[in-house]
Image (cartoon, rainbow, N blue to C red):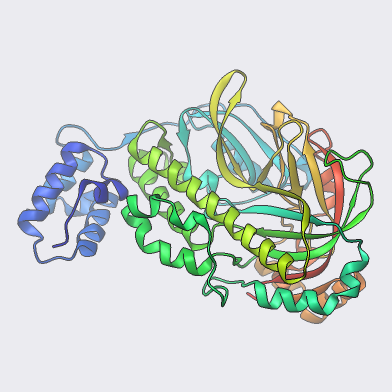
Length: 465
């Protein structure tokens, strides 16, 4: 048997001291010939389905303790509130009813203070994508999402919009050589970044084996709607960047924390669901108390995933611009799958933004459209009714399957050609018609953001899926 420690048990949801002591004593006596992985898998099964283990002489004592026959249960059960906490919906006409229904449910959690639903909203797991939720002293892993720290980054370059046409071939070569998309693999040249030296990789047992994958994936992007785009940006008069109002070349990227963030999300969602019992239809919204060991650990791990996502964008931008002999004169970046400690109505809350852009007064952010439509550089207006948030994009109008069924490759090529856009990789699942009209989405949040600039994609790289 491997060296089973209380930390290992905490990671899979065993947070009660008496229960952990019982488990370690039982494992020492009865599970000597099991590997550590086998024991942890068995213990996870017992925690999730304790009733099935009650009749066993060995596991029955653990199951009894979990259910509460001895010294009370290790989890707490909660009821939902009768009425939802206040939340405002922006652009409701374009939002599918199921997403609003999901939001309504999230607003009934006893920890919820306030929320908002952005005009790009659509159905997600737990909290809808485009959902913003402010909670008291608790963090909900599924309200942050699986791709922790998914974010945007925009580099404005001191070149005119003519640069892309002139160096079209070199840009395509750079995109092929210095980007990588998909679940596996990474760039051919090993990437270095200080985030890889974060002590959490050594402190948290479950993060140790993830570090090698994080090294491999550094500077790469995922699948789905993640992209790397060269295009032109036209800055507005009197923009808050302090740059002349004209057209520039720009690089825009969208991706997150890769396998690292997904593993953290999975780990702590399971712990939350094991220790915070809600009615079945709301169980995905299980939370971790910020005062608990698991809550503090998730917060640290989430922050690491966010830092790693930022590092990936830094490597993508750095590698591409350097290869083309370019330098950024301004960089804007923002997370849109994350949780923050903020003050709302004079009280500290945990604000979850799942597919939503932070939009405090004067805060810069990026709201992309699709491959053939603009992305907008914006500054927030600090609207309390929106919990200081804005949309994170145009939002899907079709599911991936529906997009696949409704668009042929040749039709998409024609669409891209008419818009003057070159696509490297990509798939019909991400065709522009699968998304809502970005102009309508921006119009629906005119009280949330000011427009500082308008970016038009010209050369786009995506995963082939």
